[in-house]
Image (cartoon, rainbow, N blue to C red; front, side, top):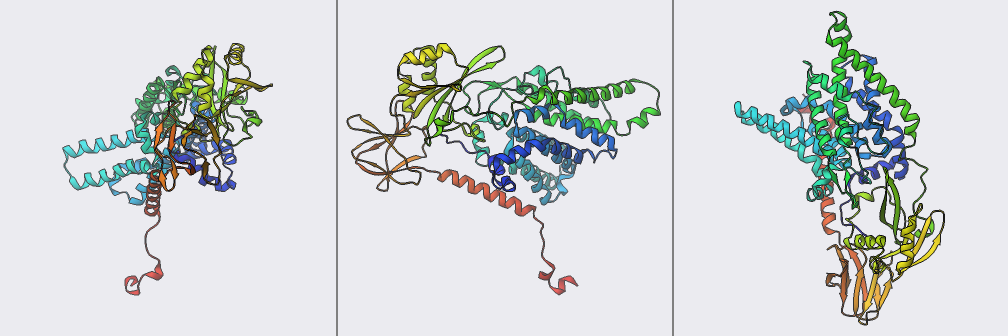
Length: 574
């Protein structure tokens, strides 16, 4: 129905990256999912090589990370945010030890790390929330130390860098990140269609759950490794403590059910980002513990460490084997496939901008659910769910009345919102079909293997002109920005969600904008003539300009500083 929401930053990132595929974003995303296991393994290899030089341990850690439940589920479900976290989080964690002496780190390093965090944030706001928790913990620790040992200059140096790491990723994602402050639940959800995640009993086992994830009884060794590492006296305790904290946070968040991305119904939150960080911490903890463990155990008597080490190795091998078999058999039939057919029949998308109400009967568990969405000439494209507006209450009520058979005015409401067709995809609900046929206002056009199509009676156009005699006339909005011409005074009604940016200009003046009975924007045209319909994006362009300035400033701070030798005088060289 039209959206005033800010476009997520990750769409711009993909658009720039699609340069390598000659502007084909679809091919880029397909390639990304194909090679994502390799990139996930490579990033973990880059991290664990700082903890061990043993090749078998490096390979085992990389493979275990790529075969983790969260990695499998993220790829099967097409979770771009979680995949970006899995790929980039190890590179970020690799730089974290330098933050212990953050006051001596160069601004180039600080801005470079902020850019990487900002890139992941553009795909996953939950990652920004998780990283903010870590940064705020560092600030709190420094403040407690400052209270006991007052060193003003040192504290200011550390605080300024902490705050920069906290603020820069947020500023890089303007205005999308700023808009999320007005909708705080967006810090819990990832890009894409709002598909339900698993329940808390699955998440506590480091399995995000949901369609396309491995069965819960394929217990991964993540929880076992973290519990063992917490009681370790090595560096593994630090990573295990954070991993356990994020696991508890993921378990709590998974118990929440919220509506998001234009979905009117509540669904359990997907916690892939939180579990990706948990899995990373578990892998690093395991590497730290196992590095040199064989030599230590060989030189000691048999005790509980031998038993724990054996259980850990056996659980990792057993899970890796069973997960690999599941991926190549049952798991191959995942939701993310390239051979899925279109939901809408092709003939419904012939006219540009045609709105179609699609009703589907979906099986959710042991029950069937009727779901609907408003399509604009074609199926949803990449990024469409992220800017989908909140469902109109008038449309929701009209569809509910249509389903229960009391919607005598449903066709009038749908037509007022510019919806021309009603498409019910097979398998159809026979009772609902009879209700639509008999309720009035819907003329059946076709019935095929794809489903049944009805034509909604009424004007059903995006822009409708109503004259003083209450006669409604559809108005064609030219793509080239040409004016719309009326022959008499009246009212222009736009079948889009109400937004203050919608403007109609006549003779250089803006017409008065009001809401009609359905909450749609309408404009009073006191005199006939030419009109221009525009969407004023001044504020949005201002925010995008600020985002570009922030990005340019960060890049300038990252680039090497200094002068060329030919610019340095002889006196300075000698």
